[in-house]
Image (cartoon, rainbow, N blue to C red; front, side):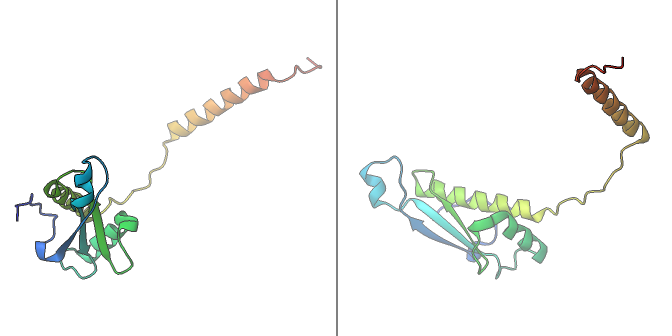
Length: 141
């Protein structure tokens, strides 16, 4: 068929399967007769394209778009042409895989500086004095 935008994060065509579906929206009677929407499926569990850590991150990112068998399904039906929906589905899959391929940076816990602690406690003291000043006057004063 047509040539799709290639990305280094897009799995080989052999690992992808497409199903065309009816879509709603603008287009009149034509919409009810043509299958312009696309369901792009990618069997993540059986694929050798991703390393195991990326597969786990992809499953977390995909959420309910991935079933219990490890098949990720992306539905694209926002465009009126089948070609554009197919491109959209592949682009979204590549973006999802790209996100999953980057391991999150490990957070290194930091401690507040001595000056920061002092400033925070001083601000708390000042705030407390302001609030104490709002109360009823002390009759012994």
